[in-house]
Length: 144
Image 1 (tube, rainbow, N blue to C red):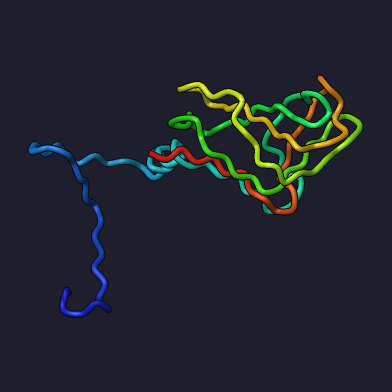
Image 2 (tube, rainbow, N blue to C red):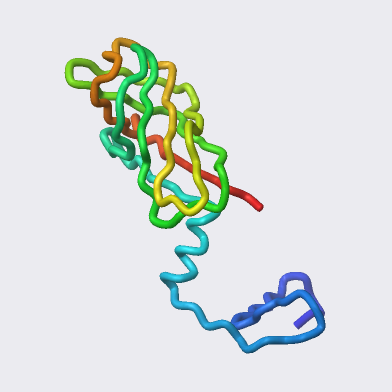
């Protein structure tokens, strides 16, 4: 199998461990593995306009503070990517490419508070929803 660099070698069912003592193999379901992955990276795919991911309130006329539900608590305060988002209030909407920031993250919580700034025309203190705009995704990464 190793006589040519064009050969492929496939392996599955391996569990690597630190130390000199092996433990029993840990069998996990697909759902358990997926939830473990969500602790490190969670993507809300925009696919098209108006994929809502956060609900909260306007803070002034240019910023929306919203809570985003998570499928499982994320490992630590994440880096956030969202190339294009829209904030919709009761009487106006605004789109921005300004990157969101974390307002509040707590270990073990299944939601995260984010700030989406760079908007205009929002009404302070009024309900605001934040959506993916122009097919953008909301990506939260919490690397090791």
